[in-house]
Length: 164
Image 1 (cartoon, rainbow, N blue to C red):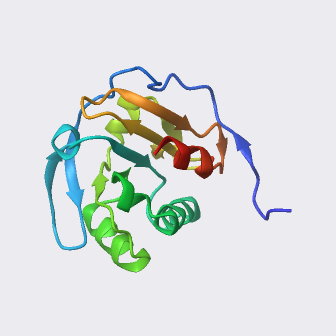
Image 2 (cartoon, rainbow, N blue to C red):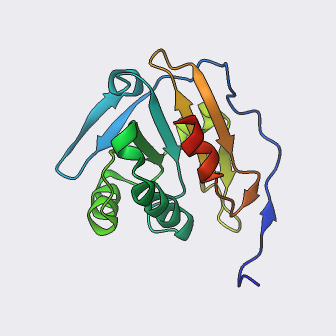
Image 3 (cartoon, rainbow, N blue to C red):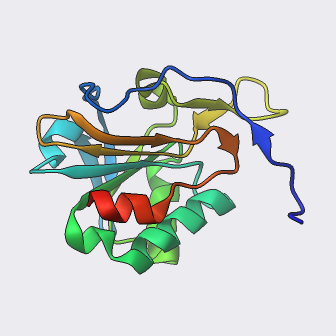
């Protein structure tokens, strides 16, 4: 039995398969530096957008460990997105050995555009993206979408493997 409560999240009107994913520009952090970048400029072919809770939260750590262990970054361009600052992303990348760049979106505007906002319990006006994965074609058409409906919840990694 987990030592935390599993909580159902409210329904969401998120982008789905066949939709055009919103383009955005935010700081993109890698192991060496960060700079403002557009999602569409990063997408050189298919791209996997991994939305995760703030860096250091166990779901974010678990998701990135699984992505690393499955070698997804060798198969496709992978980028992450969370509310964490570029400084926190840099530390998270270094500490976890993440080999994908991470978009920093402290105001959570991208999560709002994608319909994946998660209000954090007990914290007034603090929100982050709920865990989500979007497989995007080079024109940002959504080929596959998974969005958490519970907290915590993780994607079916085998299903994502099959899509890749």
